[in-house]
Structure formats: structure tokens, C-alpha cells
Image (tube, rainbow, N blue to C red; front, side, top):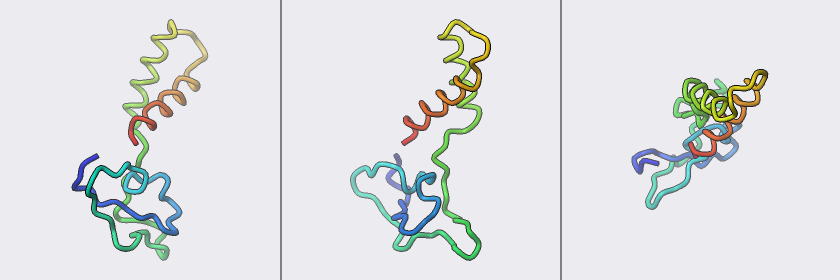
Length: 92
């Protein structure tokens, strides 16, 4: 994780568990927002960074899993979910 990323304390934020600024591991000295930047009036956060891997990375990982399994039929959903889980764990 880059040191120049400002982290979020997440207090009372409803989307903190899907935000990279909250879920990232702290590496050494790190800056934090003084207050959670979530705007409750607009139900949004201008500083939100999704901690979900992008769709193309999930697609490639699912394809890799499918190939490793010997290319079976009917496993696309399971492979997709496994790929998403694998990449989400590495993203944090």
C-alpha cells in the first residue's frame, strides 16, 4: 500500500468495509482523515476507493481456475466467486 494514500477512520461510515481507505493495512507512518469524509446528506463519499478487484481481473482469474480444473462445464459461477474471493484477499 502506498504511504501517500490518506486512510479513513471509518467512524459511522456505512460503506467503510468496501473502501480501500478503511480496509487497507497500515504500513508504518500513515496519514488519516481527521473526520470520516462520508456525506450522509448525499449518501456518498468523494474519497471512496473500492476494495473490490476490477471485473477484468476477476474474469482472467476465473478463466485460470477453469483451466486448472480441466475445463469442466457448469462451473462458471463457482469459478467466478472463487476468483473474486482470491483477488479480494490479495487486494487487502
